[in-house]
Image 1 (cartoon, rainbow, N blue to C red):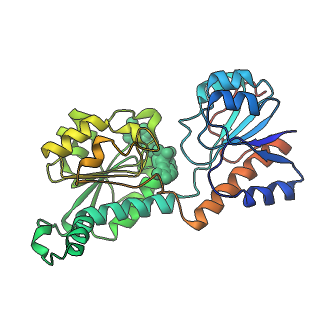
Image 2: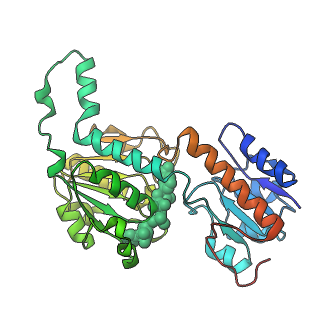
Image 3: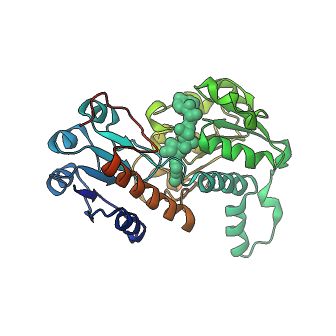
Length: 321
Ligand SMILES: NC(=O)c1ccc[n+]([C@@H]2O[C@H](COP(=O)([O-])OP(=O)(O)OC[C@H]3O[C@@H](n4cnc5c(N)ncnc54)[C@H](O)[C@@H]3O)[C@@H](O)[C@H]2O)c1
C-alpha cells in the first residue's frame, strides 16, 4: 500500500505524519509540478494526496494502480474528475476546513473597499491628513450585497454581512439552497438583477460551472459605483474585460484573492489599477484552518486505504479500481 503526497507547500507535514502513524500507514512526500513528475514519481502508488499538480486523464491512465486522490482544499479544478470517474478513481476534497476564513477574507475585502482603507492609508502615510479624498463613502446598512453562489462559504458570508445591516440578495443555480431557513433573509434574484442591484457582488461559486461568467456583458450590467469581490477562482472573471471595466469606470473597484494564473505575473495589467486589490490565494488560511485541512486530507486517504470509505466524495465511480 503506497500513499504519496504529490505536492505540498505547507512548510511541514507534521499533521499528516500524526494521522498516518496512528493509522499504522506509511507515506512519502514528493514535490511534483508537472504531469511527467506525477507519472514518474507516483508510479505504483494507490492513494494520493494532491495540492496543485495536474491530475489529468493522461496522468491517471499512466498510473494504473491509482485508486484514490484527496485534494488539499475545496476546488478540484486541477483534477479531471470526469476522467477519474470513468477510470474508477475515487476523488475527494476537504470542503469545510476554511469556510469561516474565506468568508472573513471576503468581508475584509468588502469593508476595505467600502471604507477606502487602502488608498486612505497610503495617503495618510504620505502625510496628507484629509478625509475628503475618501469621498464618496456609503453607509453600510444602506448597501445591497449580491452573492453569486450560496453554498458553504456564500451562506457563511451572508450571516456575517447581515450583521452590518446590509440587504442581501443571492443568485444560485441550485434552487434547493433556498430551503435552508438559516438564509431566509436572502432575497432570491436572477443573475441580471444581482448585477444591477448590488453595491458589491461577491463570487462564491466553483469554476467548473462558471468559467468566464463575469465578462464584459456581465460587468456592464453592474452599477458604476459597485465592487466585485472574488475569493473563489480566477477564471470565473474575464481578466481583460475586468481591466477595461476598472479603467473606464464601468465598475468602481475589485478585490481578488484568486487569479486565472497563479502565481500571478507581477506585470499583469490588473496590478496597474489603483482600484484593484489582490491577495495571494490566502483566503482559506488561518493557523487553525491549515491544520484542519492537513488532518482531514490525511484522514480521508487513511480511511480509503484501510476501509475504502471517505467522508467527502466528489465523484462516484461505477467500477472503482
Ligand atoms: N480563496 C480560497 O482560499 C478558497 C478557499 C476555499 C474555497 N474557495 C473557493 O470558493 C468557492 C465556493 O466554495 P464553497 O465551499 O462555498 O462551495 P459550495 O460547493 O459549497 O457552494 C458553491 C455554490 O455555487 C453554486 N453554483 C454553481 N454553479 C453556479 C452558477 N453557474 N451560478 C451560480 N451559482 C452556482 C452551487 O449551486 C453552490 O450552491 C469554490 O470555488 C472554492 O474553490 C476558495
